[in-house]
Image (cartoon, rainbow, N blue to C red; front, side, top):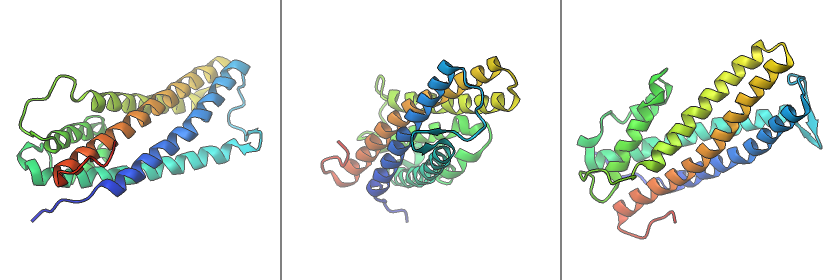
Length: 213
C-alpha cells in the first residue's frame, strides 16, 4: 500500500542547489560577455580572474549541477509517488518514469514535463477539475527555458570544438552566453515551481499552512 512521503526537506535542498547554480552561472556568463567584448579567442587555456581559477570554477559549477540533477530527480520521484496516492488514474506514466524519463534520448524533451503536469493536477485541491487559465504557465515557462538552455549549451560545445577563427569562437561564445542566460532563468523558475508544488502537496497532505511561502 502506498503512503504519502514528506518532500519538504528535499525541496529545501533542491532550492539551495538551484540557487548555487545561479551563483556560478551569473559570473560565468559575465566572463562570456567580457570575452566577446575583448575579442579573446584563447578559450581553451587556463585563465584566472583575480584569485579565481576559471578551470576550477567550471569544475565546481559542473559538480553543483550534477548534485542538483540527482537531488531534483529524487524530489521529483517522491512527489510522483504522492500523486499516485491522490489520483493514480490521472497519471499517464508509472512512477518509475519520474526517474527514467529524464534519461530517454529525445523523449526527455517532453516526458518529464508531462509527468510534472500530472503531478500538479493530482496535488491541487480538485484533481479532476479542468486546468485553470494560465495554471501551468510556471511549469511551461521553466520547461521551455530548461530545454532551450540545454540545447544552447550543446550547440556552443559543438561550435567550440570546430572553431578555428575569431568569428567562429565569437559565435560559440554567443551560444554559450545564451545557454547561461536561459539556464539562469530556468533555475529561478524551477525554484518557484519546486516551492509551489511542494507547498501544494504539503497543504493537501496535512491541511496546514503551506510550507513554502
